[in-house]
Length: 105
Ligand SMILES: C[C@H](O)[C@H](O)[C@H]1CNC2=NC(N)=NC(=O)C2=N1
Image (cartoon, rainbow, N blue to C red; front, side, top):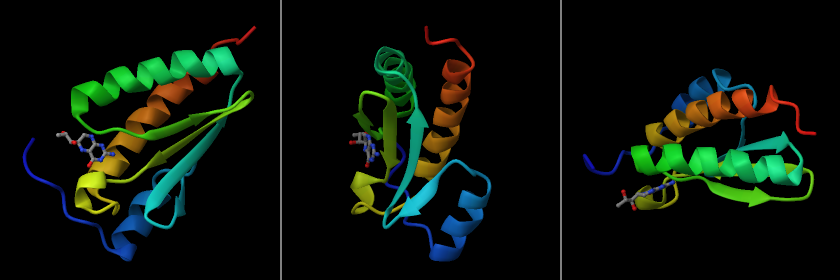
């Protein structure tokens, strides 16, 4: 990996969040909650994990019976937000769009 990305400023974070309307800031994380049934959520997690493995950046994922909560921060940067987090969030949005356009029944 090409070093640890540096933490973004509050202004940079706000600008990047404006491009990701489904994400909100929660301290030093960005968070998205997806309404999805449990087993469909499992499939979405597998898809996300496969992408994460290839880019070397990982979300913190919490699956519940009817929703999935995804939080992203950069552990190697002292749990601060970096460009890597926004890159992963955009990739997760693309994966979520594919899964949510599929009937879950
Ligand atoms: C060595 C490996 O690339 C690092 O541990 C990566 C793995 N995935 C990661 N994921 C996240 N979210 N933050 C990190 O700092 C991080 N570091």
